[in-house]
Length: 294
View 1: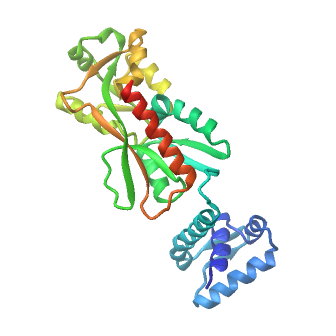
View 2: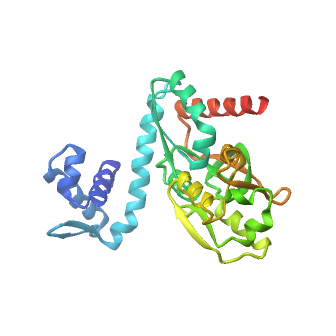
View 3: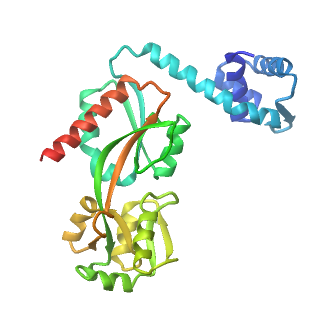
C-alpha cells in the first residue's frame, strides 16, 4: 500500500465510479481498476462493491477512507510547503461568520488584495459550527468564529471583541420590558448560529423559554423580521447601530458583562501556515489595531 494507491482509492470512493475517478486523475479506467484491485489484494479485503451504477464502499473501505483523505491532504500540504518560498501567493481559503464579514473584513480584504495580488483569496461564510468543522477537516486554512471554543486540535487567537445587543421592533426603543412582553419568536442565522444560545440564555433570565425560532440565511432577512415585530435577535452593536439610528429597530444592552463576546481566528495546530495566511493574519491584526486606536 502506497500513497498513489490511496489517492486512487479516495478518488473512486468520492466520485462513486472507476471511470469518473480516471477522468479526474487524467488516466485510463483500466489503470484505476488495476490499482484498486492491487490495493485490495495487498490488504486482503474488498474495499468496493461493484454494481451497474458504479461502486460503493464496503465496511472495510469505509474504515480506510478517512485515512486516505488525510494522506491526500497531507501530500497537498507538503507540496504547498515545498513551493512556499516566503512570498504570499496561490490559493487562500478563509472562513468567516456572516456578522464578521459585514462588520470587520471589508477593509481588510481590500487592503490585502492590493498588497498581495498573487494571492487568490476566497472567503467562505458560515456558522461557527460549520467553520470549525471545515478547519478541522482541512477544507479551510483558517476561520473567524465565535468564542469561547474548546477544541484541542485548533490554535486560536482573539481577533476582535464585540458587544452584543438584543434587537427588537423600533417602537420598543428604550423599553426593554415591552420588547420582552411581546416576544414570541427569535430570529437567527441557520442551525449552528453562534448567538442563538446566548440569546436564549438571556431570555430565560427574564422568564422567557421555548420561544419558536426563525432561521434565515442572511442578516437582511433577520433585520426585516425584527423590524416587522415578528421576532427578537442578538447581534453586534456596531453592526446594528446604523439601523437603529435610521429607526428600523431598537437595541437593548444585556446584563453587565453578558453582552461581550470574542471573535477568534482558528487554524489547525498541526498545519504549518502558508505565507499567504501569515500575511492575511498580519493584515487583519493591523486593521484591528488601527480601529482600536481610532
